Length: 313
Ligand code: MEV
Image (cartoon, rainbow, N blue to C red; front, side):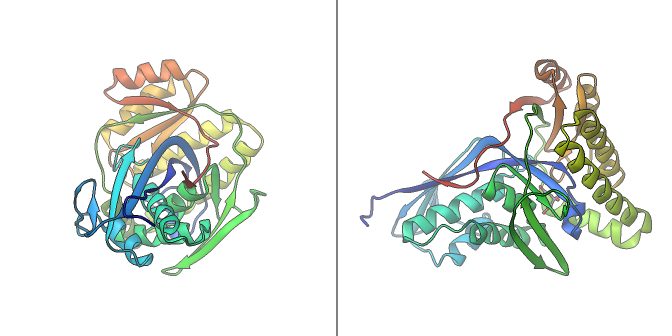
């Protein structure tokens, strides 16, 4: 390998259709990969670099974790992302997943998606203090991933246990659906929001029941999606948004965008950790939803689903 040889891999972003936060406690969830990708290019370098500057793994813990796991040092990393960071669209999981694949390619190691998903999950877990493998799995395997949904009928792709919880990840068929993402422009870190829910759930029986309820309606949502029943799926998404709001992870900006989208959608909800970030709407009228989101201060974009996972380019 010459010093100049470069190795590139990309992973898709994702949105969580149903089940964020409760999935951290082993409840069901489903996420769909989207046609916006995170790309990492690596090459040998005398010192570790990120986008032309010396790498500070204190600021970039995911990168530090993935480098360590791959015994990689003396690497220059160039990133190129179509995903806003801290927007609920999986940018950190897509970074970990694509970096892991690019490093494995550079070292001539096998590209095993289960290994990559496991590394990306653990990078997330360390950085956030607690996490589910939802984002890491969806950004690595792509298309649609259901967690702990025994009736989803898809092939199991991998499974993991950590911190007293277990998750089984399966492929889920993604019917033709149109989604609009509305980005609030507010960057929200996942770790503190996950911690907020943990505290609430630990000290309050009601919050714990809400987490269970999110798990229950997620199973109904997966069933509705399997039957192509978009009305029911949309209703469940909107219900999920209300439950997440009760858990305290929504905010005025998200609520405004959800409400504005509902006039033209089957359903709408925040996606990811909340506190800002993004919402999604399931709709047959994407242009009208985009206008409503714009009018209420959000940045809309129509996303395609059913896209491939981590890819060496
Ligand atoms: C973040 O995209 C999703 C959360 O459920 C956290 C996690 O699953 O690790 C909030």
